Image (cartoon, rainbow, N blue to C red; front, top):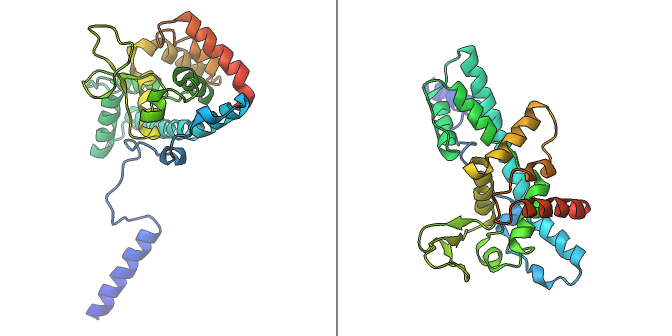
Length: 258
């Protein structure tokens, strides 16, 4: 009888595990994990080998696009979590300790102060935790990396012109001004680089206008347009408005290739 009872319990646990009701593994966070795309595992192609411009552009977009989509999908999961938690908060339901830990992590990651009242936290997070249009990412990376041929892209996955400020954190620019300490950031893989770039757009004060444009589009239930968001990127480059004009032109010219 004792053996039969043990066997019965084992069978019940097995069924629960198979149907996802109970897990023997600790719950993994879907909020904090940086997604990995298949392209991130592949060597960076030698884009300089292409003699035909359209083939070079297609290869460049094909390499980067999966990483952009993976990050955007991850961001949408984060947004869904925030929306769900906000609904619980408004309805007066209890927020679990784990959910609060996730919320605090997101707030820290996106530089949002957590107050006693969580409503402003949700509002600020939903402004910052949002997608970047694929077309915008692709033309920015093409512009910043000379279509993937810059040494920063080839040797450090930096297709974005991102800087870092700790000695040894990246590449020392050949034309760095005297007294400057910045370096061009170096990354171990494409996924980490893409995550950092998109997080930078979503939390840095310089791109507040871009986020405001995106929020306005959300409120009006309109598509988040790459062209519209370029208007908020004047501070991404020293060229300012001319940079925005060039991005718009690149989106228009390369639309069919993306």
